[in-house]
Amino acid sequence: MTISAWAVPLMVLGQFALISIVPVTIALVGALRRVQDRTVRWAAAVLAVSFAIPLTIWLVRPDGAQSLSKDIQPAFVGVIVAASAALIVAIHRARRRS
Image 1 (cartoon, one colour):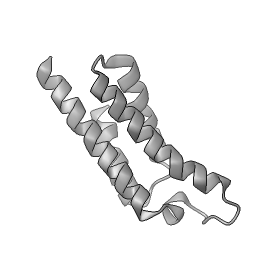
Image 2 (cartoon, rainbow, N blue to C red):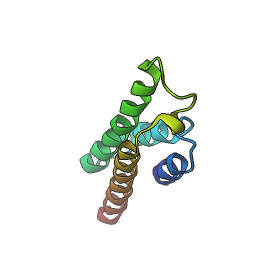
Image 3 (spheres, rainbow, N blue to C red):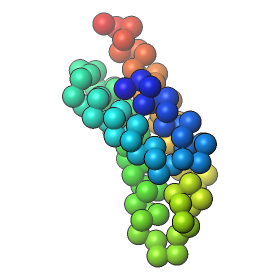
Image 4 (cartoon, rainbow, N blue to C red):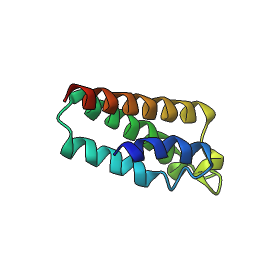
């Protein structure tokens, strides 16, 4: 799950936004199934929602670009990177407590 949280911003910033759905899903499912800490769960949910919004916009728009990486707004990239950073911090804190 930690590797997935690190992979998301790297993939989005590296112009592989559509493929980053895989680590987003892994992080969300891993947080919901294996972690008891609510902060980690919330951070994973925020990451998933922050990724789902631009993905949905890209899929719904009839005049969108050929790839999600070309169509995504820079503000959404910033939100995704910030949500991923929050998830990484939450995972780190949860591991320290246990």
